[in-house]
Image (cartoon, rainbow, N blue to C red; front, side, top):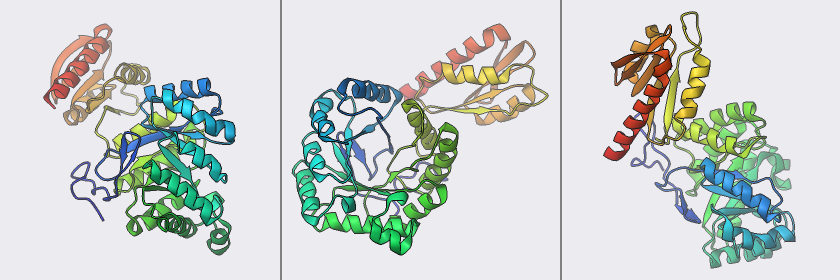
Length: 367
């Protein structure tokens, strides 16, 4: 069911109306903002190293963080880690249901695949432990690791992923557990999108979006932008992670950018810059990078245009909140389509940054 009250803009379809759950103090689903997640890569039992990564992710703008629980030491470390974590914690559990029972005493969410936890008695024990603390469970289905019965019947297809999700959802529902969110991750765009689209009309639970094993920054940017951005623009998705083989902060920056450019998050600077061409009379590539760097702290939604000549500037700037156009040793600042001032190149950037900061402050105060 589509929620007509939650459209991000008039050109986008509304988000699907889903049940709302809480991971710590972060609401997921319903009319809550789409949250951004990541995962530490330390050994969780190394509390200091894990805390350092949690701090980095909090500073980068993450909302929720998942940590691996690979052994008993990891499981028992969660209590101390949760006490010092700046963000809600999700415990990632595979196979060993007893780790989930220990984790449930400390964390804000459990990520499991009920089908690989074991017998129904073990699944029931996890459900009861989570119910006792009003703790949500994320059912994590991966295309590359489906349960045997679904892999043999459907293969690693969207249909197989959806059937696995429905089976695992029913396992928990049979024990009266409905505090759920669901992920359906594959390592390619086509299967990921098809699986989420197929399951969306069948359940009311919120969706955690992601492309698993997406690769390095280059490959993940393409895969995540296509799959997650496409789904978001269709109204599908309540929380997300952009998996990258790389630094933690890159995952958050990419996710925030996808949210912004998909129209589902109105926050921060949107940069418009012209391609390089023979008309450019300044080092535009360096200037765009410098503008991005100098304005990265601004959270007020603004369209900022950075142009390399006056030919594009006067036209493109009409559609931007504020623009800077570089010329031969001089340039212009254009505000809301009108030339504000012309300045020598040595003074242009500083004046432009000051104008953007003032505009952001004025709009933030107004809002």
